[in-house]
Image (cartoon, rainbow, N blue to C red; front, side):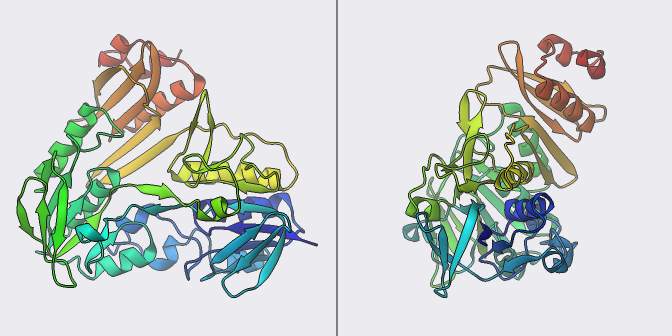
Length: 403
């Protein structure tokens, strides 16, 4: 009897096989991953793990024995080279051919890299994505080292916070006018710019990287304004792209990721996709979410449907970022906002930023203000919107606005 095959042993893949085994106790399940270790958490990689505050075993999403106990065939260090939809088979790099009843693609995403012409091929240039990346980077995270971070999004800012906390000399360049410009309002950018500046990070906005210099190993950088910097290593945080090569090779529909419907099903009814690699319908649009909650929740919907169910995925977007002692919690999606309200938090240095389109609340950024985050999240998920003027008034209790 052909079984279920899941390609991609990250957060989504791990969540999918665990749920699928609950839903279908008897059918064989195979989880295939290219990395040599069991599925692990990615968010702590660039923070607690890099800081030496979390060991490898604690990174694992499940103990290694879980997969044996659940009769899940976990194949590590294994790359899938082809999908044959007509035959319902996948081929791995050894040449072995595996048959499937249903197939799921949880292939995740890959970091954007600097082009070779800009020095991207030099040693000492790192991405923040995999365990191998972080293990290699940890060797150079020494006090006094000169670190250049390219990209002022959340990945770059989190890397800057860790590097500065470790005593490194950090310069961060962002080609756009401000950090977080693609994802947050100017008020949120202002908050984090001030936070990093207070810790000694040299943030240069409106300044890109022209090219890196060095003989084999990076030793310097030339910025878009002509400035030359001496650097010991570089961290590149300029975004990620969905991993769709296998899907494209198999002829599946791709649209900013592997296109799926509300059931997490691709254009082939026997193939599903979930996580960073999948784009799905959300309200009147189609989106792709790069977050742990999305990876888990969408994967579990896929698992239910692979087991014969008819569940629909209704995304409730939320995200977080840890920088120094600040926890940023984000509820909703701010796309299309036209009004911003900033509400002071309960203590100095805390606040929340509320995004509105007309009278509709879209999203909330809460900086060390978990109460504002939770209340905003409840409102967004319930489809209710408080008056912007009431949110802006710190004398009005937020909880009273829930009704």
